Length: 253
Image: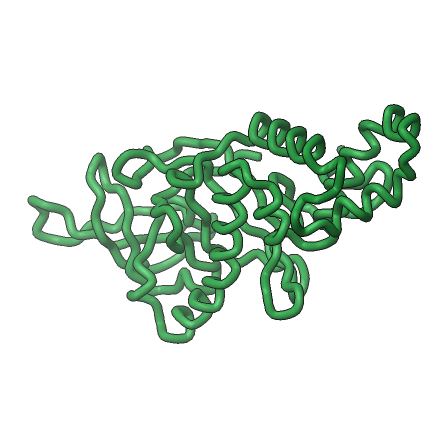
């Protein structure tokens, strides 16, 4: 999945929702080769935004058009209700960061505790189904083994070490990421009342500013409210997973 890059500050909110992009919103844009501050004054029929910017050497402000993805903003410049909406996202992104640091730090049992039970079961089923021949030969019941692996909290299961090694290897190889240089976009994408979709940017450029028009990969992360806590329901895929043999973890074309 590819997306246009935008100004990103790791661990901070970087995009408003469509409703927050209103006339009068103060935004940061790139004019020429320089970053500057402007104010949205209108929206074009093609969906772009007219932004009035102050330009050095010009007696009058200049109005130019930008796509939403080419604009950044300071949350403190938003109305109070918008700031409250973003504050409500903090618990979601905090759990997302917790998962990323644990998972890419090589501690799957710690990351296991930040995952939703459905995702743990799907990952266990994925590994069990891929290794069903030796497991059956070894006397394991596939469904029981997957359920036990999904419910472990200390990695005490005799198959845990093998599952952990494969999951960490395959995901870190397929979706490389260093949490210390990654970023999470802030636009709220609701899948359901208690389920949200985040987008994780694997890296941020030097100075926190990407070149206009540049594109890089982003990884989806599905978050679901479980009791009072947010949990990771899927990583590197934007769908709600379905348990089974095999489970559905990724979109099937």
